[in-house]
Length: 96
Image 1 (cartoon, rainbow, N blue to C red):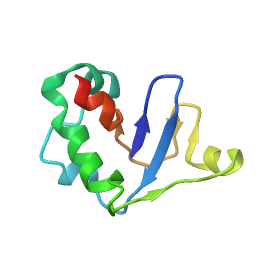
Image 2 (cartoon, rainbow, N blue to C red):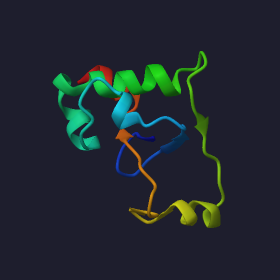
Image 3 (cartoon, rainbow, N blue to C red):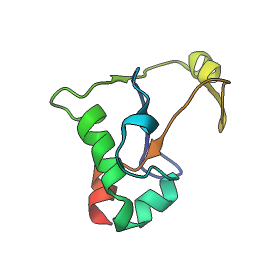
Image 4 (cartoon, rainbow, N blue to C red):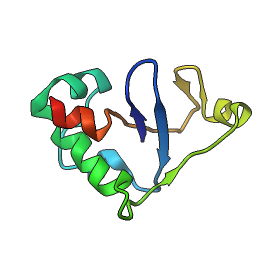
C-alpha cells in the first residue's frame, strides 16, 4: 500500500501479504479521486484501520535505500508482479 500525502510527498510504502483489492469491501480507485471525493473515503479509512493503524495494523513500513527501492519501482512503474493500492492519508480522507 502506498500512502501519499501529495504528488510531492511525503510517501510511505507499507507491505502486507494480504490482497487488499480482494479483501476491501469498498471501492479502491485512483489516489486523486479518493482524496477529493468524500463518497469514496470508506476505502482509504478501511485500509488505514486495517493496515496503518498505530494500534497494531497488519503491515510493515518499507524502509529501503534508493537501490532497493528501484528493485520495486523505477519512477512511477512498478516491477512485474508487484500490486499496490495508493491511498490518501487518514487526515485527507477525513477532510473530504
